[in-house]
Structure formats: C-alpha cells, structure tokens
Image 1 (cartoon, rainbow, N blue to C red):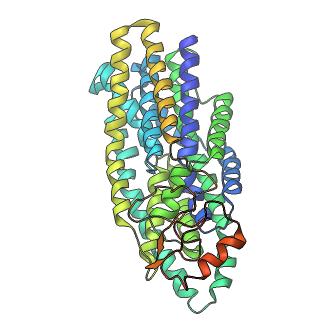
Image 2: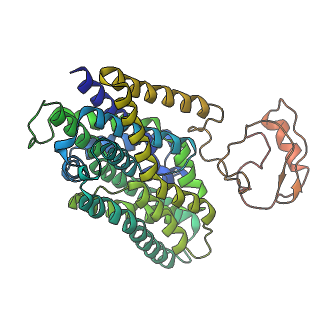
Amino acid sequence: MLLLALVVVTALAFDFTNGFHDTGNAMATSIATRALKPKTAVALSAVLNLVGAFLSLAVAATIAKGIVDAQVITLPVVLAGLVGGIIWNLLTWLLGIPSSSSHALVGGMVGAVLAAVGTSGVLWTGVVSKVLVPALLAPLIAIAVAGLGTWCVAKLTRGVPQDLTNRGFRWGQIGSASLVSLAHGTNDAQKSMGIILLALIAGGAVPADAGVPLWVILSCAIAMALGTYLGGWRVIRTLGKGLVEIDTRQGMAAETSSAAVILLSSHFGFSLSTTHVATGSVLGSGVGMPGAKVRWSVAGRMFVAWALTLPAAGLVGALCHWIESAIGGTAGFLAVFGVLVISSAAIWVVSRRKPVDHTNVNEEWDEAKGADIEAVAATTGEAGGERIAPVPAVATASSVGPAIESVGTISGPGTDAAPKGDVR
C-alpha cells in the first residue's frame, strides 16, 4: 500500500507539472495581446481545466490500455515512467520550451516497460496510431487551420480602425481561450487518470477491466487546476512573445483553431499533444497574417525538443527502472523517488536565478538573447539607433520623463513600451 500510495502521489505530481507546463497553450496569446491580465488568465484557465477533466474519459482509456500491456505493468515500472515524464517536463519548463507533456509521459512509460520486459510489453500499434501519427499531423493541421482563419480575418477587417478591432477581438479572445482551457482539461488531465488506473490494477486494488474511479478523476482534476493556476510563465512567454508578434485577430484565430483540433482528438481518444496544437496554431497565425514576422529560429528549437521528448523521457524512465532493479525491493523504489525529489528541487533552484512571473512575462522579446529577462534597473541603453541618456539609480516618473524627452523621438520596434534599458 505504501508503494501504491507513492505512485499515486507521483502521478498527481506529474498532473501538477502538466498543468503549469501547458497553461501557455490556452492563455499565452491572450496574455500577450493583453486581452486578459496574467493572473486573471491563469485563474480562468485553472477553473476550466477542472471542469474539462469531467467531460470525457476516452484519453484515459487510451493511456491505461492502449500504449503498454497492462499485464506486465508493476508499481516500480509505473513510478520509473512517471519520473521520466516529470523530469523532462521540468527541464523543458526551465528552458522555456513548450514541449509535449503527453509525449513525456508516454516516453517515460515506454522506456520503463522496455527496461523491465523488453519490446513485448509495448503495444506498438497503439503507440504509432494513437501517439506518433497525431504528433505529426496535429501541428500541421493546426498551422493550416489557424493560417486560413487568420487570413480570412485579416481580409474581413481590412480598413476597420485598429482600436475597434482590438476591442472586439479581445472579447473574442476571452471566449476562445476559455474554450482551449476546457479542451485541455478534457485531454491532458485524463493522462494521469490512465496512469493511476494502471497503478491500481498493478497493485491489485481494482480488477483489470475496471473503469476510472471517481476519486481519481477528482484528484487529477484538482492537481491539474492547481498547476495551471501557478502559471508556467516561462513557457507562456515563449508562446506569447517568442514565436510571433501577435495581435488580437491572430490570437483569437490561433485559440479557436487549437480548441477545435483538441476537442476533436479527445472525442476519438487520441493522446494528442495540446502543446503541438497550440504552437502550430500560433505559427499559423503568423503565416496567415500579411506582413507578420515569424521567428523560425525559435520554432526550430521547439521542433528539436519535440523530436527528443519521447526518447529522452524514455531514457530517464529506463534508467530509473535499472536503478530500482539494481538496488532492489522497497529501497530501490524509494531511491528512485528520491531522485525525483532531488532533481525537481535542483531545477527549481536554478530557475530562481532568472525568475519569470506575471510581472515580467510580457517583456519585449530580445532577438539576440531570446527569452532572457533583463533586470529592471537604471542604466544606459539603445532603442532604434537613438541613445538614451543615463537615468539616475533612484528616479521618479517626473525625473525620468524629461531625461527621455530630451533625446528626441525614439523609433524602432517595441517603442510603445518603455525603451530597453530604461526604468519601467
């Protein structure tokens, strides 16, 4: 019972990391366009993720019975797979890369099963049809749908005053972002439900043909909602500011496209990566908007991370199972749990060196430094070729204003916000 309890806790911890890792899928564009305030956005997303977790169980069944053979699953295998998924989730969050929590979980489980019983324990047909094929098609479909939608919106709003379109589409974004959060709950919260069901079957707590118990649904929904409320600000920043300089029309088109693709996949039980869909939709909004700039270098780093997710999480899962086997018994099980705790704490400590939160998530993206957030301090800098006069270390709004005005008009990207290097 102790081992089963630890596995359930670890599965809920994965659900928690899934929540804050994937918050940006629903809310990054709304935060970037200021349709919603950052804290309001994550609170709304958390509530709708909680509701969405109760709407469907098709994906939970896919994870529990469609990827690996439930008859060869043991509690140590489940724990090793979960550790693989969590560590990869935390590493990509630290780097601000919107990778797939779904694929991290599947990769960790497959790696642990391969280490335990070999290739016979993996249902390869299910992996290909339910994971790999959707992974290839989902972002392409999302790019196409969002690109077409954005192009149509751009044509329809040509000549309409920008203030008017901004007001209207910001309201539209609230609705479309809410729909994405609801869809995310119907897809991602169920993955941990499926893993806990596997653990309960392996521990003999429920029969092999059992459905997902109500307490599992409720606990997974709450864990996902709590993680979402914390806000994965690093990933939100990359999706909202790093890929495309997005406006409200693009934001609504991207969010609507994401919701449509995710809800359709949940209906058919596909363990779809909501991250792949959301990223594809954001890219499509840049492709479909005439004159928009897409940062393909940032997208390229994401694609590399996507390709590495399954094998990397699988390798961690396999290593964890080998540690369990080498030490043996309960001691091996606890050793792997200790690896998870120490690794998670170390990643959190590193993340505190350059924190990203709701106060700076919308800082302008620096082409040279990527997502780095510069400390807000009085200094000397440049904007659009014009030199900014030094600003005293202690300054008020009245003292800073004349210092900026004295250098003349500042031109260049991002000048509607405070110039780079200035006190914000």
